[in-house]
Length: 329
Ligand code: AHM
Ligand code: MG
Picture 1 (spheres, rainbow, N blue to C red):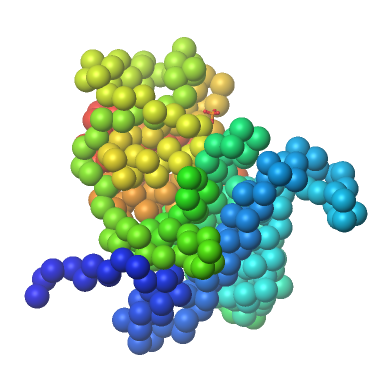
Picture 2: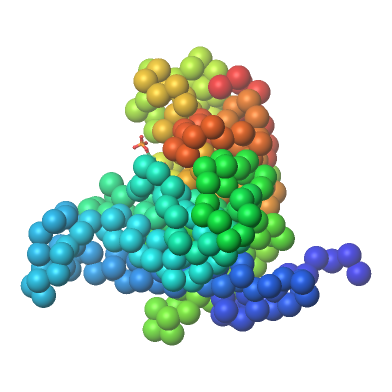
């Protein structure tokens, strides 16, 4: 029987992770626990985001709320929560976060994994009630167990990821992840406090009619990108750009489309970060049958040279990304 096993909808994330792990008798369960830790933190962020408008939590970093607690911006809160969950979980020896300049040593000397995370991407959208997201990548450490993490643990190519995912805090909250055996999406059920499998074995269409780019940068783009954008208009594709990477990516993943953040005259490597944003989405899109490139090579094969390195990004449906690359962006 060559039909791939497609898990049925309606299972909780917990049960799904357990059954998934059972297929690998040698697995220790550490990766499963790490995914649960991330899911746990994301539920707390979901709660905070939903209260954001009510308690004016967003713009008041450094002031005090009525209980005398320090109020912080949501992106700072998200950073603290994810780091705490990963530290307490014990499976992770080191973290790189978009919010921190240097890598974080969790103190878990025996943690097998390292995590790259953008705790709350698109945070300029919080104040206007637009979707935002969390993006994460998981790698095995390179340094020996029992020692503190070193820079080389973090500077790994995207092909080395053992897991990656994102959480979209949208009209509903969704967790989408892969461990290299397809992509599965879970929708958060508020009243139960559980993620429920809603889109098993996600595949992205090979073609689409949506292009997503900040076209305000048009004058600063290369001739190749300009020509491709004109091609999109000739084809009468729809322009859709939220300005929130997870939301733009998720829509295109489901409907078929291309997301681009090219180099501009000002930012020679574009805006998005290889380690915290691009690698995770590239792993997911490839697992779903799509393509991710910097215009010259696969995102996943880029050799990182620094933690906060930026790269141009062309990601989405296979035929659309290949077409864009053919224009020499
Ligand atoms: P951030 O990490 O500071 O939130 O910035 C990343 C965001 C992405 O979500 C989005 O794709 C991009 O910035 C939008 O940038 P621009 O406003 O230049 O179009
Ligand atoms: Mg970001």
